[in-house]
Length: 158
Ligand code: PNS
Image 1 (cartoon, rainbow, N blue to C red):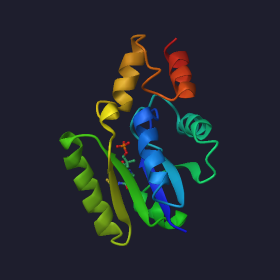
Image 2 (image 1 turned 120 degrees about the vertical axis):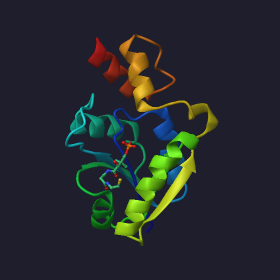
Image 3 (image 1 turned 60 degrees about the vertical axis):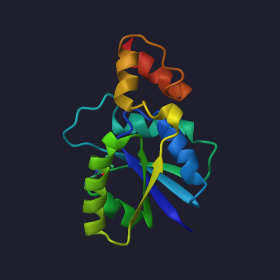
Image 4 (image 1 turned 90 degrees about the horizontal axis):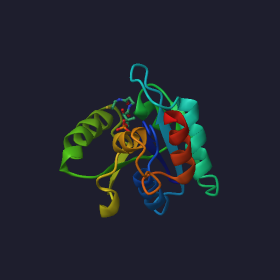
């Protein structure tokens, strides 16, 4: 069984993340969404809230599990029996950071492959930060976020 980890902060999980996830599901038998517990970074949603919101989005898909993790991504991959890391790439501006992460992960664990999927053009502008910014000022977010997550973020800013 080919297991991949789709890691991220997911603060919050957007429709762009969902698009990458759905396409990754076609390539792997099982996907684990790994929600990073940031020791220092201040997130809008707690790790538990993020896991709960994403679990609701993927509840119909038996091949997807959502877990939060801390520490090194490659250690999480090893403990989960994953052979690959999934990352979405939106634009050239993502490339440098992603290349750096790939290089570190590859050095630490050469057997863990990183698979990059290009964002669908309709989501290439979208990030969690953009969605939070729009939500903070009361803009329309229903096209940006899964509906349950849009509702949670509206409540946060209410
Ligand atoms: O959604 P993000 O914030 O771009 O995701 C970044 C993430 C979670 C993939 C990355 O920060 C990560 O893997 N952190 C775990 C710590 C780690 O393994 N660091 C070494 C690779 S940079």
